[in-house]
Length: 73
View 1 (spheres, helix red, strand yellow):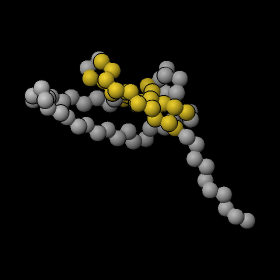
View 2 (cartoon, one colour):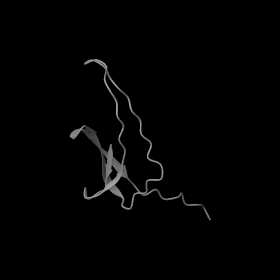
View 3 (spheres, helix red, strand yellow):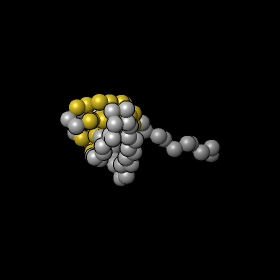
């Protein structure tokens, strides 16, 4: 799994896990937690899922600025 930057030129984080399907109808669920990842740009990043060298799934990950609530004075 890879997390890509807004400009698609840099891989921000990457993780790999080996697994085996015991039968053709089998399945596997893998969960990755990327602790400490810091996004240097706001905008639309992408997460990519590979099976071997083949891209199987790609989904958007919007990184937005969250402003603290204003206090009444």
